[in-house]
Image (tube, rainbow, N blue to C red; front, side, top):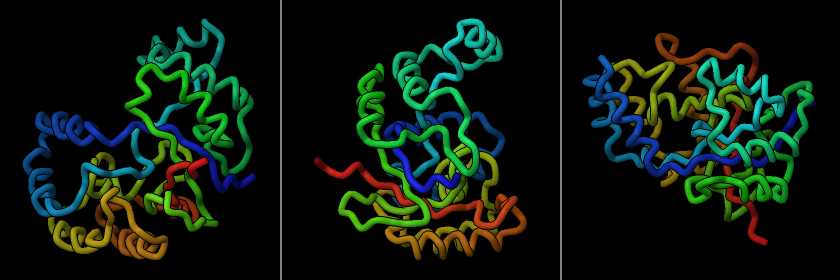
Length: 229
C-alpha cells in the first residue's frame, strides 16, 4: 500500500532553532555552523514549517510492562501520554504494510481529536501532508523534500536549518544559499518544481549529502494547513 496523504501533529517552529543553536554552542562544529548561519542570514530559517520537526507519535504499546521497558532505554512515554494513547487507539497497533507513515492520522477529525488531548496544544499544529498528487489551496505552506515516514528526514532542514546527519561542506555554503534563494517565509519552496530543482542539485553533492537507497526516496511533500471548515 502506498500512502499518499495524511495529517501530522508537529511542534510549532518557534523555539526549535533557538534550542538547536544552544546545543551547537558546545559542539566542536560551532565555528563552522556560525559560518553557515552567516551565509544564510537573509533566509527565514527560524520560520521552517516542513516535515523535519518534532512529530507527535503514538504510544508504542498500551502494555505497562512494554512501556516500562521503553522507559528503561531512555524513551519518554509520559509526556503527552493521553494524546499519544488516543493516537494509538485511533490507528491500532497492527503495523501497516507497504510504503506507509505510521505517524500520520487518516483524516482531520481524528487528528483534531488527538490534538485535544495534548498537554500544551499551543506548541503544536495540525498539518496535512501530500505526495504524488498535490492540491491547489490557499492553505498550502509550501513543499519540502525528504522521507515519507521513518524519521521524517528533510534534505532542506538537514542542509540549512538544523544540520545533524549530513551538514554541507564549507566550499558549498555560497552555492547552497543560491539554491535556497527561492524559499518562502516558511523556509519551504513555493512550488513542487522549485523543490524538485533543489533535490536535483542536492543529489549532485556526493561529498556530503545523504544518498537514496531506492528511487525517489527523497519525496516532494506538500505541507498545508487543514482546509477551513
